[in-house]
Image (cartoon, rainbow, N blue to C red; front, side, top):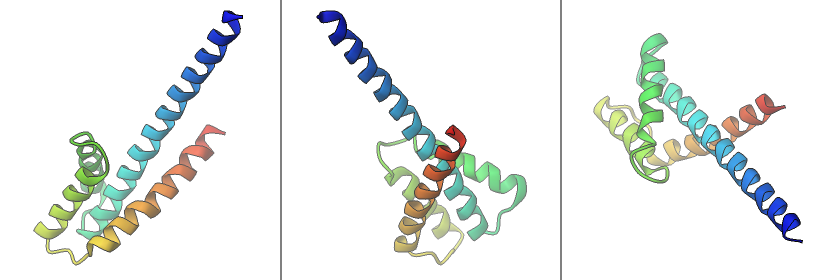
Length: 109
């Protein structure tokens, strides 16, 4: 009987690891998309926009949650006098999270 339990436990562990990997990919994608959007708001394009997007992705590793990403983009907007409200920034983060989920799900098919 313990063999069945161990199989189930291993199955749950594998599912959890898979779900966590997908979650990581979705948030990394969202942060990249957010970085590209924010770069456009600041007048960056091409290689500069992609470099900025990478900085936004890296910012997510500073603290748990979304505040590190929000604070980075907010500070950069303020430094460049970009008139985007906190509400619009947070809404963009939410919208881009949905876009990222859809993209990752479509790539997994």
